[in-house]
Image (spheres, rainbow over the protein chains, first blue to last red):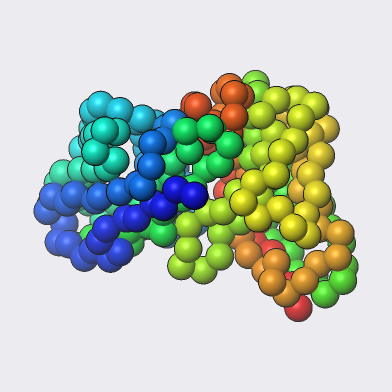
Length: 109
Length: 116
């Protein structure tokens, strides 16, 4: 089945710094989503981005489906950005959703 | 503006007990999902319902049953709880079916379940 790998596994930054999180996947996918799990465990859908680039405030995401990766950019990090960021893909038959193991982001004040 | 509501938020069971986790969404979504999240891991799909009246197995269905009661509600049942089912359970919904999801998913706040 599809393998989803996220990097880095952990990232510690000072407030105001920029960061890039990466999601690699091993096969063609039907869709790709980025989620933020905050320290209280809530999962928030950030982007639905099977291809192309999207932006929402300080966050943006790019998926290059032909090269099987997606990037999540966070600019001017704030402490509220802390948490775990997951990418999730659906395989080409749309029969399974596979989550990566996440990137744990800690923003220090 | 509730979105996806899960009940209960916390539950402790003894091995062998049964229980049902409830999930309801008010966004008129067609598709609903149940996931489990174990410590330090991503989510794994247990079951999903692409549309009212249909259910399908996900990655880890053993030990669980589901019911899509109507368009709003999707319940997950543990018939005989085991310690390996200790986890955080998330329900999610999305706008359209056609497989697991071709639309953004929206999650509930989770149910923390401990099996002793």
